[in-house]
Length: 102
Picture 1: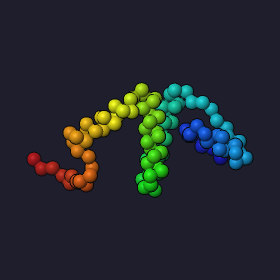
Picture 2: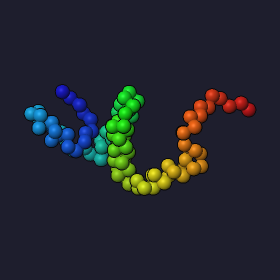
Picture 3: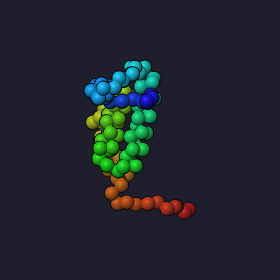
Picture 4: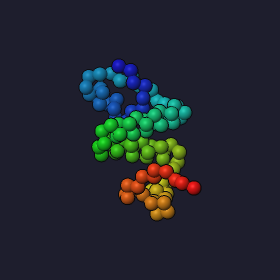
């Protein structure tokens, strides 16, 4: 079976433990960037389909990997989130903008 996708570091080990042989390679920086973004989309799609905490945790894992890739500080990212929530609010009030009129 062919996959051609980014996988977690211990997956080859898990595949071997099940008696299969994983064929892998180490991504170049460019390929890693592309595959990591594709992985984010994959995980978001899975969350949208299943709506569970495990899929949400997978999204967070990819976000942390993106932080590492782009040298973004995770604490700063959280601060940016908090600052934006303070200035513009969060989504707790469930407000839907239907339209605006001039």
